[in-house]
Length: 201
Length: 311
Image (cartoon, rainbow over all chains, first blue to last red; front, side):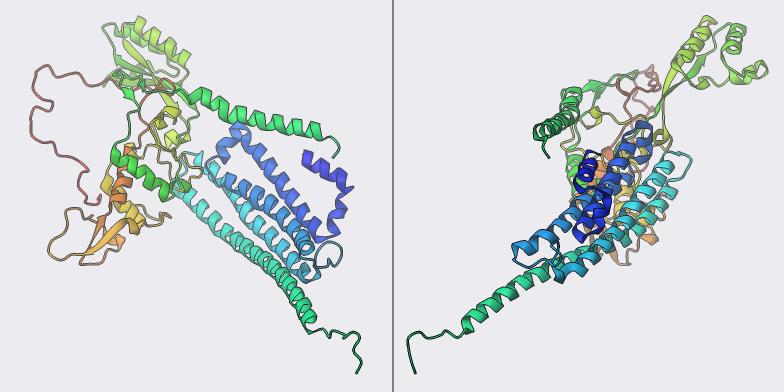
């Protein structure tokens, strides 16, 4: 909450997040962080913990923290900083034009991946917890719930994999752009006509 | 950010509180634990160190990542008390009178049926004070009765253990694999539930041949598949047809598989402790002669020691 308030005060209002892709990464990351904190709070209440412990629920929370918050913040920051380190001009002062589309794709794939992994883990975890706490429910029913959760989460894992590929591709494109620019400069320097001084034909 | 020192102080206090709660407090609570005695009728030292083979098996358990799908922590929501009537004594009307007063819904018509085949639990699932009052009343009538402490909770009802897992259970474990998810069942008391190492070996090789629909992956690389040349090895496992062992081949567990099975069969949560009490029946009385128990010195038929699959 402190982090959210701090950012809210710094940004002025949330509509700023729509302005550029880097802030959109940060916005989604913050949302994931707040969700993770809220879910952690829920599972820290003793009677509720009986339904969330020893299930896939903590796995979903960890994913929101590690991928949803840390990785997405890093993606946004890297898209912003790397072009500046490589002397690549930023199209709108935020991100290089060559990776703008890839970054958008990266964001949406990552969001889809998060929804399809953290969602089933958290919801499936609660169902799993309810079944585990009902001693009359056979363990087979717990197994079936787990399998369904794992199947849906696999779709999310594939989306996250695709998002990471987009990121790698974007980073690779920036590096290529950097080396191409250096090569072009070196070529231009090597093939430049050096004006001869003081020699008359 | 113009409140640097305050933010630093807040972060420092948050981290210090976490360290205090998650490191220092647990160290104070369980850091000095030592071997204790069980609280049953015959106190024994608990826990005792793991056998060498089981200790190796713990490393295999960790290496194979079993803790990702299995937990080793039995949870307990509380304890209730039962009252067990062991002897009715000579004053039956007084006992029936006491039962009328203390047991809700007690029907004097069925007293004779209730008071036969002792010992018998006459009241279940009551509080300690209610149980004590009932036992006092029964003893005043000349009967012999005891209070039984019974742990309750979904894990106990599923048979995962007789009581909750406590820190003492892991006192001699070089590493603790508590687990955080139950994709498979809890294994804290798997040795108490199924102590047959051959069942575990068959289950590791072909899980679905032993547990229908099991999502556990087969650990076939922990076994050697050998072509039978002359005779079947004494170490070979006997499988059901569902295991898919081809004709002319035998499956022999490696050292790692044997160690893992030894570890699994060593896992037990069935000792009553001061920190996790439950009542256990008294041991059978010693035989009055000095003859060996069972009246014969022949080797008893060891149930479950064959590696034949369960029917």
